[in-house]
Length: 419
Image 1: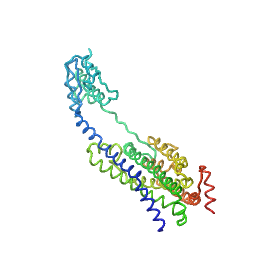
Image 2: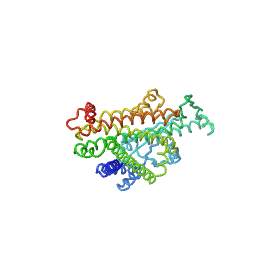
Image 3: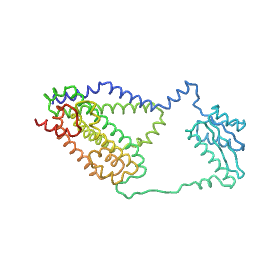
Image 4: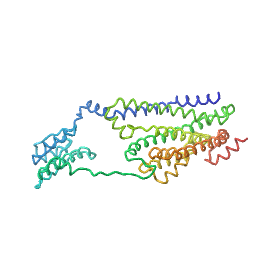
């Protein structure tokens, strides 16, 4: 046990002190704070540069009847856009937009049958929010004008836009309501991405660590005093614990960053991703499948890393494993819209895909308890087999030197381990 803890601490501390790990963590934390406070940063930069955060919309109202109603609509919507009624010539105003003297212009007129027609001018090819706001406001004004022509009361106008009562009831025993699905979808996607990132990143770290020790001949000294099984799982647990610490730091940073930003943004973000109604069961399943997925791929990564003699060959050796993780993520991402697809059900019991696919299904569907338990049991058995087989390969692989011939070296590593 003493040897196991020594290797565990060595893996944890050594990788935790590396410049790459510290810089990566610092950049990710800085990125979280940057994204959370992006709006405030943009406003500050505009103030420093002398730019006004207030947007001015110039209006040329040829009819002379629409501007006041349009301004009232923007005030009703609490828009930060200021409307400026211009009496200049229409072509002169368009020329000012073309010369960037004014940002935006809307020209409004009424047809013979009292229908609003308008044209929006801007030099920006990516502008879409303001034109949408203008169109919605003008549509409301148009409705009021037509209602007045027909002598309709406000209540009568409202009845014209009364939405139909339409509900969807799925008879599938595993289906959730539409509201529950919308709440779960964002949460499952975020947690799925975290599982994918952690598994692929930390598994690669383990393979690189094993290959580095082997290329420096340190491995020969370690194996002479510690059994390969202890060395294998001490590495896996050490780097896994470091990974959990890094994710905890990122989670704490995200929490602090969101607390320092505006309350409206936090509420909107939490509601969009479904964090306002966190399901404890989903969080528990996320932790379980994260740990199982990590141990499965980390054990495989250590096995593959022991077969190479140079760190330059690590990426080539673990490429098949990387493809498996990518395929699992693609399967799960494709099923976000419809988690009841048949192929998702079958692949959720394949150990390499289960951490993401089964988590998707259990997060978005009301599955019988036996389904996730069966998937977890299959993964545990696979991890045990990989640990047993991996230790045999690892024992001989760490003593193999020379050019790597990909997975063909597994047989040679097992034979060398027996000797």
